[in-house]
Amino acid sequence: MNQRPTIREQMDACRPDSDDLHLPEHAADLAELQAGLRESVDVRTQWERSQQDSRIIRGAMQDVSLPSGLEGRLLAAAHAAQAVPLAGVEQAVREETPAGDHPVVSTPAKTNRRLVIRVTVGLIAASVLVGVFAVQSWPQKEQQVSKDQLASQVDEWLRTVDVRTMVKPTKAMRPPGGVLGTVVGSSSIASSQGKVTAYSVSLRGSNATLLVIPTSQQYPVNSMPFTKVSGISGGWLVGAWQKDGVLYVIAVLERSGADLNQFTPLRPIG
Image (spheres, rainbow, N blue to C red):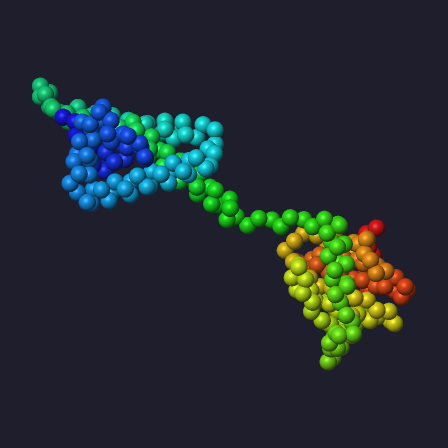
């Protein structure tokens, strides 16, 4: 004797925003659901929730693309998973039945194909949404800054620096980044790339400006020796390097006769 599907199973068998509930060919299969919707507020509430869940799944399936063959493999796996337990139960019943007896084996109701498809589609949608969320949440590597962008940023920073307003250190201070010399003044400036700390550095009568910029971006420079930066206005000679999440920029005025190399322990790449 076949078991009747529960009201919940009948709800799951109805596609969202469809006429499944009112089609004559489904009247016998959905009789309990139709009666429940007429007589029970609780059933109507569950029905609306089921339809809304189905709309969400349908929308997810329409918004994302599935890997080729995934849906077919999941459907096949769902059918296989349902077939195996039944075979095992029937075999166990046959083995335990005494000879000559004629047992009455209760065969479960045939699986509603639409229900299988809806459950499988739900699993597909859930797995795809998890994958999309994981991809969107995964930290993205910062895009590399071009040479032209670096030159433009350095130009902006050097124009903002005013050595006359720098704060003088209260005691002797060496500059950061392995730069040679002594700090004679420092200041902080704001830019579109964030906070920039500027130092005025003196070494054997020559002066240089050192810029220190914490950044997660990848600049087109080496970690050391410094890389020359061209295209800077104002008569500046500029070198830059990046190390441990910090961009360093060293600059001297060409007319001063100072040499970038004297402020750094290693010679630059040409």
